[in-house]
Length: 452
Image (cartoon, rainbow, N blue to C red):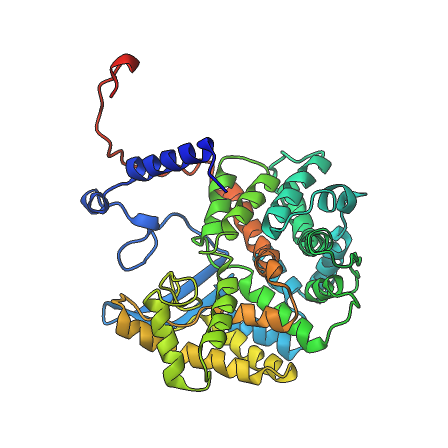
């Protein structure tokens, strides 16, 4: 099809943008500007204080900073201890961990039961919301659907703009409760209207956990195994919070500092998480592994797999971006504690699903990729598998469609966003406003008639 005059004009204007927006890389060095708010070693600029979580990837040894096994602490509690605690007691951890992050203490039995009942009570949408909002204009992008639904919920809240702590907490608890419904129902609407599949809307069961309800609402027959629900629950706990510096949480702080309402702040965080450099990484991992299986004759041959990984880095395979997805992290170097915790459960789930060979392939890539990256790239710190490397595989084994991979991340992370929004509102009364150095030269105005 021939391009229209407008399309040609826009393309030419886009080229003009690429030229006139470009800033010479050496200017960042000259003015000591940290690109991405990180220094050359990848350490983030200190932008705030938080009591919600802590990430450790290095320690001081004889006055020198040395990388160490990654550690993640929620409110001072090691994530490994938290997970072990509820798994040993054969409980689900989402609700307990959410209580800890929101209120700063581990709940006792009565507090936990009351909190579960509170979330169950909030797990409902306004009358006809599913019909009028979710089903009326379905789209193929579930993160945009989530954002639309969140912003529309503000219209049903008589106190939407009230940013008192009690009202914001009420709003956050409601959003934490309904996020699974918004995500799953949005997917079903898309699957029906865009993919011509059957439509079914299952109501959540107030006696079930968040993970159980998610699987119940997603599946046509509402059934799931105990292991499936427990592994999904674990994935939600591990994705729930990750410090104030990750892009979507920092977005929550920035937007909250302006005094805006909760719905706008969470919609902004969703927009950040949607990006493939943030919440969409596990989809890339699954796509990369599928491409590997299609282009490597013997996936048990380490030399063939290594050759494919080298092609990835050389921009000769998959999306030709030069990346091995799921490898490396902005903070961790030796290990991502979330990936370490999740991996053991991935193995167990793969055995029940008859996908042990696929798990072995993931394990091989996990082992070989850091070696290949170290050989081919100049890196300032170690590289290891991050949580996204395994989470997409987990979701695929749970028969969760790829369209919901990032929304499930959001279902977990909305707890962390809520905690950080509350922390921002309690502690800071200044709008976040970093500085930018202008590097354009002053120009003399040229009358229209004499412009070249």
